[in-house]
Length: 196
Image (tube, rainbow, N blue to C red; front, side, top):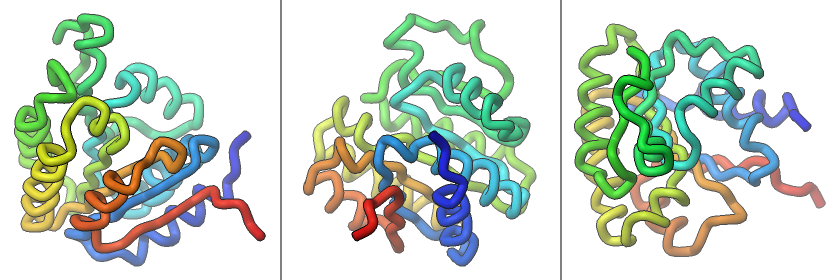
């Protein structure tokens, strides 16, 4: 069930964050769709930003269908898909002009190169890079390599005044993942917590 308050909370907290910030956005699995709406619909549209969405959890096709079902405009969303190729053997012929495939979530250097390419291509004043999700990347990479990837990626995005949003699912997080993300992020947002 969708909770528009969660989506609005996410957008309201993000709108006050300056460009070049890195934000850790931790959610319960039940609020995943609300977080998508808050980031991709409410926040990105207010900023008139292009979004580069790095997915290592669900294929770009599935996420795009979800966005369309939620009436989220996908015309300014560009996907770097790390999972379709290894899951379904997808070829570049099955993508569109808004999607590039990375052969595996372990090929983090290729992820950085694709993100860099899409940032250069974008003519929007504001750009947002969404990493969905750090939990999935942690399954495929050891913590040291993943930590190095985050430091290099976030540092490069800061220099270009790009917003970085790192999604993590509360139920699948570990203290190591949380510490790794906290080291590179300026701010943390937690959603979907039960009220006392």
